[in-house]
Image 1: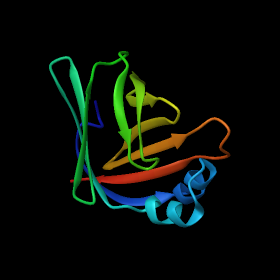
Image 2: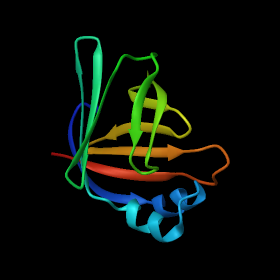
Image 3: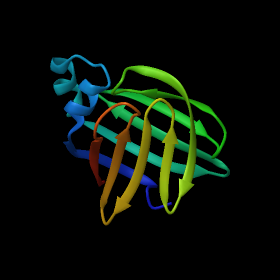
Image 4: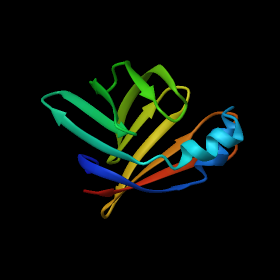
Length: 128
């Protein structure tokens, strides 16, 4: 579980275009794309957790792999039912948007993809 630990947002790649392509107004997409955040991922027994603090607001989800759960997607401003799996050391969360969380060195990259949206968006975090 390489993605376990605390992470601080460092930069984004193509998030503004990805969000605009997902239906968000372009001016809001540009604002939301670079929101600063702190992310914590981990495991407690057979339960996994994700905690994300954006602009002082904590969003938290607890889940079991392969079992549907509710997740707030801050960049789209929606709560949705998603399912998480681990594949090759990556955490993959599938809902209307697929999030793939992958660690390389001290960088956690979250890649967002959505059917019907050209390209993807990425948020990169550095380990705290």
